[in-house]
Length: 236
Image 1 (tube, rainbow, N blue to C red):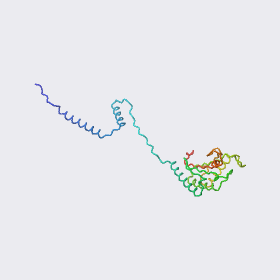
Image 2: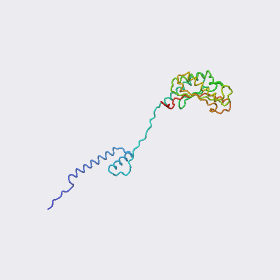
Image 3: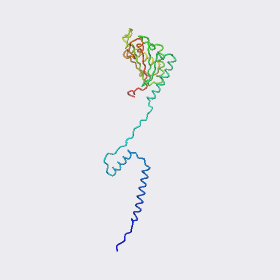
Image 4: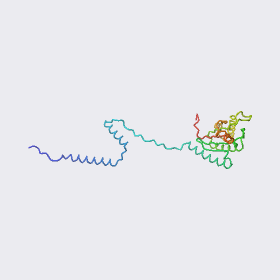
């Protein structure tokens, strides 16, 4: 008689089956607790395919967005200082009843001061008026607090031909007036003269068309630009 086989699975299969059930339960538990992101899941899948030699395409590289964190730059700090300087100067001009003849505003690079006629100069003359000297002293105080600023003074006239024997044209007159302001700023402040410049435009850059006496009066002016945010100078 042959050997009679026992009924049922071998004993080791019971242990193996229990092990598989436990592993299945463990991975189901992991999946249920995990949070999937499509991009990361795709990368993981491709990595596994590459490890097993079935990589068909190049792996996808996760590119995170670059978040630009705003910083408080030196230029921003200087603009804030410029705004404070303008406010203080406007208050002083108001006390002296000069706010109509002198305008102060904040620019992209610092401060602009506009001296209109007749506060700046008498007609056809490059001699400073007493009121303009008061404004220059106030500007000089700002320059003492900002010695690294660059200052540009622009002279402008109307289109009426010059009748003075001292100046050949409005160009010479506007240049002389701008230079006069530059010299006054140099005397009334501690700023280095190398940071001061003067330019005359004559009647060639009017604010408004020269159609009447009112518009011509607006065009006769001195503009002082105090730049805090100049580009870095060569050699520094």
